[in-house]
Length: 556
Image (tube, rainbow, N blue to C red; front, side, top):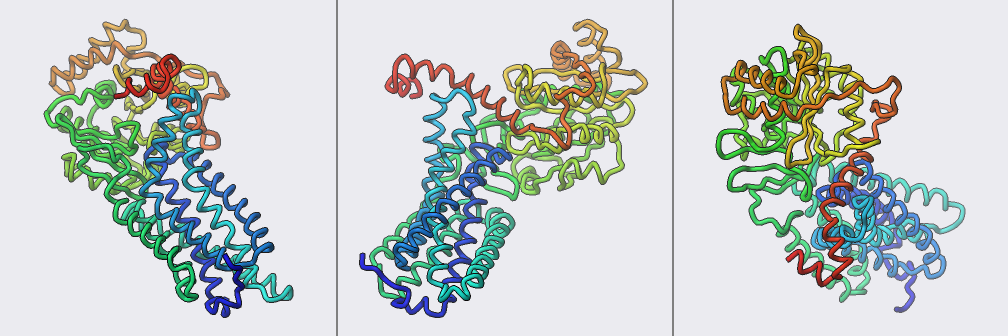
C-alpha cells in the first residue's frame, strides 16, 4: 500500500475531524468496557472479580496500543493506516454480539474439563482477552496517531495533546453513561455493541469516502456490520434454550424467564441458580423457599414480614398462602424484576414493593417486623454491603422482640475459610449464641440460616436443648397453631430434624465480615469453583482415561 500523507487527505486539513475521531474512539472504548461486563455477567456474574478482569485486560490492551501506536506513527505516519485500524476495531466490536457468546462457551467448555481450580476467574480472563483485547489494542493506537497528524510544531504540541485528551475524556464520559442508563436497559447489550461500533465505523467510512480510497474494504466492513446487525438479535445469551418466555436486561441484571411444565422460574445467570419460582399448582415449591417457611413458626408472633430481595415474589406468595393474615412488605432493587413478577409470576398485587436497595431501605425505615427474609443476590454472589455485621445489626433492630431473620445462603461451602463459615460467624456475632441455627436444603446447594432476637420465649423457644424429635414436635405444633395447614406442619417436622446450632465466634475472629472487610466475592467464587469441580469431576476422569472421543460420547 502506497504511503499517504495527511496533506493528501482534505478532510484532515482543518484538524476538526481528528478531534471528532478522538471523541468517538474514547466513547467506543468505554461502551465496549460496559458492554463487556454485561456480556460476561450471564456466564460469570458481574462481581468485582469479573470487573477487575475486564478493567485489567482492557487497560493492558490500551497500554500496548499506545506504545505500538506511537512507534507506528513515528515510523510510518500514514493516516490511511490509522483509519484502517479504526475500521478493523469497529468491525470487530460489531461482531462481538454475534460471536462473543460462542467464544465464552467454547472457552468454558474447554476449561471445565481441564482446570480444577479458579475456573471462573481463568475462563473470564481468557474470554475477555480473546474478545476484547484485539479491538481495544487497535483503539489504543488512535491517540498517538492523531497527535502525529494534529501537531504542526513543538510550540503547540502540549495544547494539541490537551485537546485530544479532553475529546477522549468527554467521549468516554458519554460512553459510560449512555450504555448504562439508556441503551442497555432499552435495547439490550447486543444492540448496544452495534450502536457504538456503528458510530465508530462511520469515522473511517467518511474518511475513505471523502478521499475516494479503500472502497472495497469499506463496502466489506459495511456488509459485515449489517450481517451482524441482522443476525445478532436473533440469538440470545442462552441461545440453546427453547422454552424461554422472556429474555432481556435491566440496569442491574440479565433476566431470563423459563416456562416449565410445573413451574415458571426467573434466573439472572444462564448457567447458575434460580432466583424466583412460581408453581402452577398450589403447595410447596420443593426448593429452599419451603425450608425458610419455618421462620414464622420460630418467631414469637407471625403478624408481619419484610422481604429483602423480593424478586418475583416467591416468598410473598408462600406467606400469603400459609399465613393469609400476615402483613407483608417487599423490597426489590430491580424495577424490571418487579414488572416481570406481575406479567409471569402472579405476584400478589396487594403486597407493596419498594424499588430500593435493601440496606438503604432499612436505613430509611423505622418499621419493625416479626419476620425478615433476606434473599438478596447480585447474580450468584451476595452483595458485600448485605453480608456485614453492620447490616445484620440493622436487620436485628428492625425485628420485633422474639422476631426471626432467615437468610438464604445459596452455596453449601463448608470448611475453614468458606463463605458459609464467614456468614454464619458474622450473624452469630450479632445475634449471639443460642439464637442462630441452620438447616440445609436436601438436593440443592442452599442452606437456610435462622437468627432470633430475644423475646418472651428466649432463644428459639428453648429448642437448642431439646432432642431432634422434640424440636420437630415443637416446630410442627407451632406451625399448626399459626397456619392450621397440616401439610406444611408435616414438612416442618423434616425441617426441624435438619436444624444445627451455630456457635458464637471468638471475639475478634477473622471470620467476621464488616463493611471494611467483606471478601464475599472471593469466597463465593471459591464455593462456585468447588461446585463446578464436583460436577465436572467425572468428565475430567473420562477425558483422562478415554480421551476427547470418550468425552464427546459421554455428553451426547
